[in-house]
Length: 209
Image (cartoon, rainbow, N blue to C red; front, top):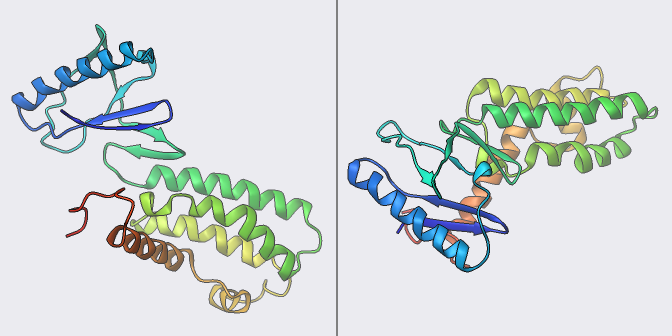
Protein backbone atom coordinates (compact mmCIF):
# COMPACT_ATOMS: atom_id res chain seq x y z
CA UNK A 1 0.00 0.00 0.00
CA UNK A 2 1.15 3.56 -0.77
CA UNK A 3 1.73 6.07 1.97
CA UNK A 4 -1.44 8.08 2.63
CA UNK A 5 -1.79 11.41 4.41
CA UNK A 6 -5.12 13.07 5.23
CA UNK A 7 -5.70 16.63 6.43
CA UNK A 8 -9.32 17.84 6.67
CA UNK A 9 -10.83 17.06 3.23
CA UNK A 10 -7.45 16.71 1.52
CA UNK A 11 -5.87 13.31 0.75
CA UNK A 12 -2.36 12.66 -0.54
CA UNK A 13 -1.05 9.34 -1.83
CA UNK A 14 2.57 8.75 -2.73
CA UNK A 15 5.07 6.01 -3.43
CA UNK A 16 8.39 5.39 -5.15
CA UNK A 17 7.78 4.66 -8.85
CA UNK A 18 10.99 3.54 -10.54
CA UNK A 19 9.85 0.59 -12.65
CA UNK A 20 6.87 -1.06 -14.33
CA UNK A 21 6.02 -3.06 -11.21
CA UNK A 22 5.79 0.13 -9.15
CA UNK A 23 3.51 1.67 -11.78
CA UNK A 24 1.14 -1.30 -11.63
CA UNK A 25 0.77 -1.00 -7.85
CA UNK A 26 -0.44 2.61 -7.90
CA UNK A 27 -3.83 1.91 -9.61
CA UNK A 28 -4.48 -0.91 -7.14
CA UNK A 29 -4.05 1.48 -4.24
CA UNK A 30 -6.13 4.19 -5.92
CA UNK A 31 -8.94 1.65 -6.27
CA UNK A 32 -8.69 0.79 -2.56
CA UNK A 33 -8.91 4.46 -1.63
CA UNK A 34 -11.92 4.95 -3.91
CA UNK A 35 -13.65 1.99 -2.27
CA UNK A 36 -12.93 3.47 1.17
CA UNK A 37 -14.34 6.86 0.09
CA UNK A 38 -17.55 5.25 -1.20
CA UNK A 39 -18.07 3.19 1.96
CA UNK A 40 -17.55 6.27 4.14
CA UNK A 41 -19.65 8.53 1.87
CA UNK A 42 -16.69 10.83 1.19
CA UNK A 43 -16.41 10.86 -2.61
CA UNK A 44 -13.42 12.46 -4.31
CA UNK A 45 -13.81 15.50 -6.55
CA UNK A 46 -11.83 14.08 -9.45
CA UNK A 47 -11.69 17.46 -11.23
CA UNK A 48 -9.54 18.70 -8.36
CA UNK A 49 -7.27 15.63 -8.20
CA UNK A 50 -3.73 15.99 -9.53
CA UNK A 51 -0.67 13.79 -10.03
CA UNK A 52 2.85 15.17 -9.70
CA UNK A 53 5.88 13.21 -10.92
CA UNK A 54 9.11 13.70 -8.97
CA UNK A 55 12.64 12.64 -9.87
CA UNK A 56 14.49 11.85 -13.08
CA UNK A 57 13.85 8.09 -12.83
CA UNK A 58 10.10 8.51 -12.42
CA UNK A 59 8.12 6.51 -15.00
CA UNK A 60 5.63 9.41 -15.38
CA UNK A 61 2.77 7.04 -15.91
CA UNK A 62 -0.84 8.13 -16.38
CA UNK A 63 -3.37 7.22 -13.69
CA UNK A 64 -7.17 7.02 -13.58
CA UNK A 65 -9.60 7.55 -10.73
CA UNK A 66 -13.09 6.09 -11.12
CA UNK A 67 -12.55 5.84 -14.85
CA UNK A 68 -11.36 9.43 -15.27
CA UNK A 69 -7.79 10.46 -16.11
CA UNK A 70 -6.01 12.35 -13.30
CA UNK A 71 -4.53 15.60 -14.62
CA UNK A 72 -0.75 15.94 -14.38
CA UNK A 73 0.65 19.05 -12.69
CA UNK A 74 4.11 20.51 -12.24
CA UNK A 75 3.07 22.89 -9.47
CA UNK A 76 0.55 22.58 -6.66
CA UNK A 77 -0.43 24.77 -3.69
CA UNK A 78 -0.77 23.07 -0.31
CA UNK A 79 -1.67 24.99 2.87
CA UNK A 80 -0.39 28.22 1.36
CA UNK A 81 2.92 26.78 0.12
CA UNK A 82 3.54 26.14 -3.58
CA UNK A 83 5.31 22.85 -4.36
CA UNK A 84 6.85 22.21 -7.78
CA UNK A 85 8.13 18.99 -9.33
CA UNK A 86 11.68 20.42 -9.07
CA UNK A 87 11.22 21.48 -5.41
CA UNK A 88 12.89 24.82 -6.19
CA UNK A 89 11.62 27.64 -3.93
CA UNK A 90 11.64 30.40 -6.57
CA UNK A 91 7.86 30.44 -7.02
CA UNK A 92 7.28 30.78 -3.28
CA UNK A 93 9.87 33.56 -3.07
CA UNK A 94 8.05 35.49 -5.77
CA UNK A 95 4.68 34.94 -4.09
CA UNK A 96 5.90 35.98 -0.62
CA UNK A 97 7.85 38.92 -2.01
CA UNK A 98 4.85 40.24 -3.93
CA UNK A 99 2.53 39.97 -0.92
CA UNK A 100 5.02 41.60 1.46
CA UNK A 101 5.79 44.44 -0.97
CA UNK A 102 2.09 45.29 -1.18
CA UNK A 103 1.94 45.62 2.61
CA UNK A 104 5.13 47.72 2.68
CA UNK A 105 3.69 50.03 0.03
CA UNK A 106 0.46 50.39 2.00
CA UNK A 107 2.38 51.35 5.14
CA UNK A 108 4.61 53.80 3.26
CA UNK A 109 1.60 55.63 1.78
CA UNK A 110 -0.60 55.72 4.88
CA UNK A 111 1.70 56.08 7.88
CA UNK A 112 2.96 59.66 8.25
CA UNK A 113 5.03 59.49 11.44
CA UNK A 114 7.31 56.53 10.79
CA UNK A 115 8.85 56.32 14.26
CA UNK A 116 11.00 53.35 15.19
CA UNK A 117 8.64 51.86 17.78
CA UNK A 118 5.49 52.02 15.66
CA UNK A 119 7.18 50.88 12.46
CA UNK A 120 8.77 47.87 14.10
CA UNK A 121 5.36 46.83 15.44
CA UNK A 122 3.92 47.09 11.93
CA UNK A 123 6.86 45.20 10.44
CA UNK A 124 6.77 42.35 12.93
CA UNK A 125 2.98 42.10 12.79
CA UNK A 126 2.23 42.51 9.09
CA UNK A 127 5.34 42.18 6.92
CA UNK A 128 7.72 39.66 8.46
CA UNK A 129 5.12 36.92 9.08
CA UNK A 130 4.47 36.93 5.31
CA UNK A 131 8.17 36.21 4.72
CA UNK A 132 8.41 33.67 7.57
CA UNK A 133 5.35 31.54 6.79
CA UNK A 134 6.38 27.87 6.62
CA UNK A 135 9.93 29.00 5.79
CA UNK A 136 11.63 25.70 6.79
CA UNK A 137 9.63 24.07 3.97
CA UNK A 138 10.59 26.47 1.18
CA UNK A 139 13.61 28.37 2.49
CA UNK A 140 15.48 29.84 -0.53
CA UNK A 141 18.99 28.60 -1.28
CA UNK A 142 19.59 30.38 -4.59
CA UNK A 143 21.35 33.71 -4.08
CA UNK A 144 18.86 35.57 -6.32
CA UNK A 145 15.93 34.31 -4.23
CA UNK A 146 17.65 35.18 -0.95
CA UNK A 147 18.34 38.70 -2.21
CA UNK A 148 14.75 39.09 -3.41
CA UNK A 149 13.42 38.55 0.12
CA UNK A 150 16.18 40.56 1.78
CA UNK A 151 15.34 43.60 -0.37
CA UNK A 152 11.96 43.86 1.35
CA UNK A 153 13.52 44.24 4.80
CA UNK A 154 16.07 46.68 3.38
CA UNK A 155 13.28 48.76 1.86
CA UNK A 156 11.21 48.77 5.03
CA UNK A 157 14.02 49.65 7.45
CA UNK A 158 15.08 52.55 5.24
CA UNK A 159 11.63 54.15 5.70
CA UNK A 160 12.02 54.35 9.49
CA UNK A 161 12.80 57.77 10.94
CA UNK A 162 16.53 58.25 11.56
CA UNK A 163 17.55 55.27 9.39
CA UNK A 164 17.48 56.70 5.88
CA UNK A 165 21.16 57.71 5.75
CA UNK A 166 22.46 54.53 7.41
CA UNK A 167 23.66 51.47 5.52
CA UNK A 168 21.77 48.18 5.93
CA UNK A 169 24.08 46.78 8.60
CA UNK A 170 23.82 49.94 10.69
CA UNK A 171 20.04 49.93 10.40
CA UNK A 172 19.83 46.33 11.59
CA UNK A 173 22.04 47.09 14.58
CA UNK A 174 20.00 50.17 15.50
CA UNK A 175 16.69 48.30 15.20
CA UNK A 176 17.97 45.10 16.84
CA UNK A 177 17.13 42.98 13.80
CA UNK A 178 19.02 40.24 11.98
CA UNK A 179 19.13 39.66 8.23
CA UNK A 180 16.29 37.49 6.94
CA UNK A 181 18.87 34.94 5.82
CA UNK A 182 20.12 34.59 9.41
CA UNK A 183 16.55 34.44 10.71
CA UNK A 184 15.62 31.70 8.25
CA UNK A 185 18.76 29.74 9.11
CA UNK A 186 17.66 29.89 12.76
CA UNK A 187 14.22 28.59 11.75
CA UNK A 188 15.97 25.64 10.05
CA UNK A 189 17.86 24.83 13.24
CA UNK A 190 14.68 24.98 15.31
CA UNK A 191 12.99 22.59 12.90
CA UNK A 192 15.92 20.17 13.05
CA UNK A 193 15.75 20.29 16.86
CA UNK A 194 12.03 19.47 16.74
CA UNK A 195 12.68 16.53 14.42
CA UNK A 196 15.47 15.10 16.56
CA UNK A 197 13.49 15.54 19.79
CA UNK A 198 10.05 14.79 18.39
CA UNK A 199 7.78 13.00 20.88
CA UNK A 200 4.57 13.13 18.85
CA UNK A 201 5.61 10.57 16.21
CA UNK A 202 5.08 13.14 13.45
CA UNK A 203 8.41 12.29 11.84
CA UNK A 204 9.55 8.76 10.94
CA UNK A 205 12.38 7.37 13.03
CA UNK A 206 14.84 7.46 10.12
CA UNK A 207 13.98 11.02 8.98
CA UNK A 208 17.41 12.14 10.17
CA UNK A 209 20.08 9.52 10.73
